[in-house]
Length: 411
Image 1 (cartoon, rainbow, N blue to C red):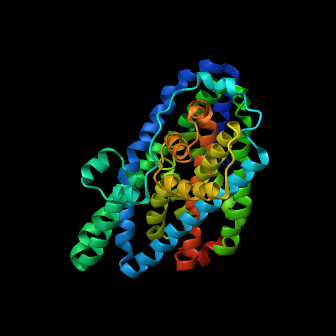
Image 2 (image 1 turned 90 degrees about the vertical axis):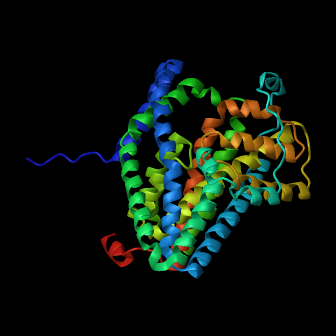
Image 3 (image 1 turned 135 degrees about the vertical axis):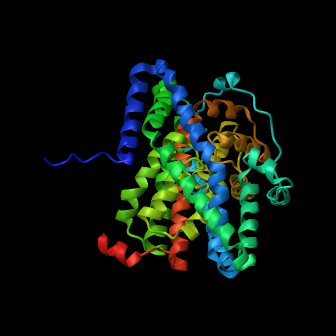
């Protein structure tokens, strides 16, 4: 007899995604009883994020073996992240002014909104200073990803400078990185159950009522994300990375299932790394540097949401945004997005910072927080997709695809 083909983990996760939605719709708020399973899944993912980022970036930098190569890759990766983030803000601004999410808003809903304390906009100087840890152990315990990345880059550079003397340590770090990938594989086997629980909780709690007063904001975010894919990601993949679009979309959906359910850029890192290395055949030397960095500073989807939220708030209070204000939104949003933690709900805090910087009221933030998970599903999905797309572009420019001719022949 012919042996029955087993379902892949991606297929099981996708089924879990659908099952979670169905459970949430059928059982409503009772589905929140599954919340602990989703929380355990998120905790396990967050457990591996810090060591994986530290080890993979250190190993990635050290394995380059050439400071000039590191400089070239670093400039390209960071530059593309900044440019794509700015373009994303512009797309969000355009779509928000077309859809007008703040016009006709029921202002009486704000009286019950959660109070959010205004926070000061961090300056460029403060952001740069705070990137450098005064105590690396504090950075690790507080999961300050920017500081961990900076320390990892320093350690990787030091290992390059040590040359032969650093070989044993580089090998040990690479072995530890592989061990983290094994742990990741164990954790991800739990993903179908975790994804189902997370979706059941969200749908059960909010149901279809999420398409109420904030429906136009949700529409703005999702419509902007479609444009982001069509106008930026597709040309980058097809023209700059010269990568087959069919192969890209056949594999990237597996990442979308995880990002939409976990709403964590950092938590999705194991999956984005696996797809980029194994399916897209990008050299781990590049992906181990660009993907953890992107999970921390590249927030294309988040930038769209920030722009839409600012325009919606201005329209609600009939405040006109001048050309200078729009330019300030672009610059401020890119800066704030680079400091946004890649964890669920981190964008809510950043929303208060941006609204404060623009001199706009904060009352709407409490209302957005209530339905933010649906928005964050899209934010995280296109944040992480941007990381992968940028990595593909840099891989093409630096000729860092592995066995590309063999892979092309198989396709």
